[in-house]
Length: 230
Image (tube, rainbow, N blue to C red; front, side, top):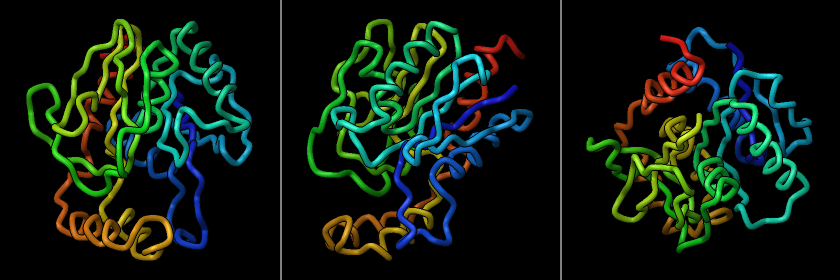
């Protein structure tokens, strides 16, 4: 099977010149749950054209520095793509912004709810507690029709969704390693986030014991079920 990772986040070489781009990090995480699958990264924000839904067997949407309410050249085409991919029965998996955008497109709502949440947070996922890395200030505030909340946190009631068609999404970043985020935060201290917020997040990340396999098995099982594989 072939899965496309749609990279929707601007990579900042002044801080990340020796780091993998977001889509590459997401693909490296996803292959842990789907080792038999071929992944292709499509850098949407850098101008790579969106594929036709039939070009791949499934799609993963990354986080982004944008919100669903922003006007960008790629935003509306991506929304249209999601509608077409759903109609084609292609499984969709969203992370952070991808989670929010899918909710918005499929009848829910996402919006800015407060200051940025950056660092490590605890989530209840199907009745079990898991910690994950986060960086967001937007959240899904209205659950789409037919979707079920399968993950939540005290500060984020809609932290993971399973839809009544082949789609699933999470607000946290299962693909992030602690040093990937903390390195960026240290290098950009005071430029991307306030210094006090940066220092607090770095301390949380330095103490993080988040598993690199976080939610990878669930994502892999989701795609296999959508493909009718065991």
